[in-house]
Image (cartoon, rainbow, N blue to C red; front, side, top):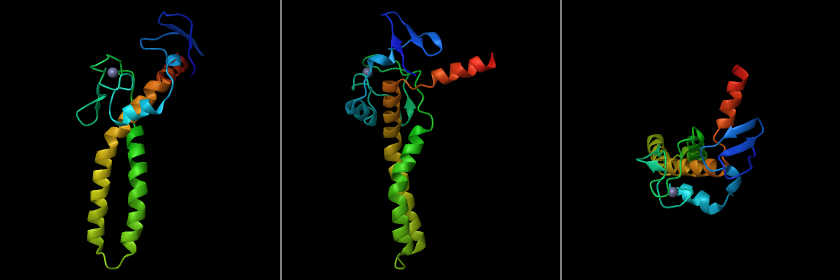
Length: 155
Ligand SMILES: [Zn+2]
């Protein structure tokens, strides 16, 4: 949904009418690869200094450096999907190569593939989560409009 900013107040016109925004209107943000790269580095997409994750995968509610609010952003299954997409494209060809080589015992092939999968997912998953948080932040695709549409249907 495209938001049209009408003034410096926190009110914007959406497709469904008036809505209040408690964060910066999306219309001000433009995608750039530096924003995506900040996300991949698990850094705040706004300032690039603060972290977006605490611990391994838990997202922070806001940036400790610039105070940007991330509480409305939920990456959901996106990071898992991207991690499996990347790791799968490395593991499946290796599976075919190792599986067809009679010199490599099947158990050894399974151990090698399992290690590559675990290490690959461990490395990629938090970076994918940071990237998704940055992309959702820059596009404003938080799903809040979908939730309000569901509530309209129920009323
Ligand atoms: Zn920040």
